[in-house]
Length: 158
Image (cartoon, rainbow, N blue to C red; front, top):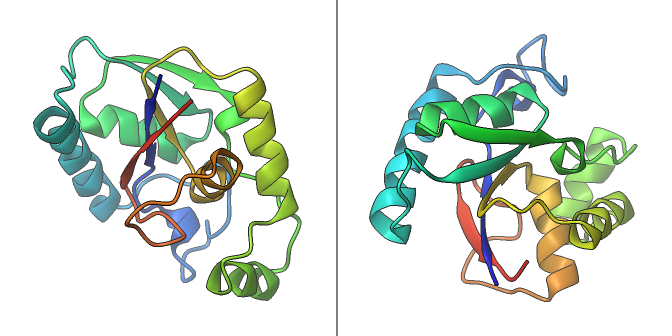
């Protein structure tokens, strides 16, 4: 069985110039809302998802919940296990890991928790490091960059 896993839209937490940079409950930026709307269309067009009836799992963080909302989903459930990874790394160290395609240990631990008890929903809206950890543990290599783009969809065997 597989699930469609999407990264949230761009938010103030991702904007280094924002006072909310790195904050867990930073809202989507206007561009993030546009990305979320486009995400809903991609789910329908490319994956045959019926937005009105699809069941979606999101992280409990505002940007993931808003992404699902902006995509048009109405049947959503939030899960703490899908929240952003608390990696404990300095920004420069995290950037080095991502540049060198090194999966932080915390991302692997978070992915292990998810795989031990995955949400039953067919679609997951979560965070970049969570997706990186899942791909690593599942041994999934696709035709994509290491770190998922905002509102990128990956099909994973979960």
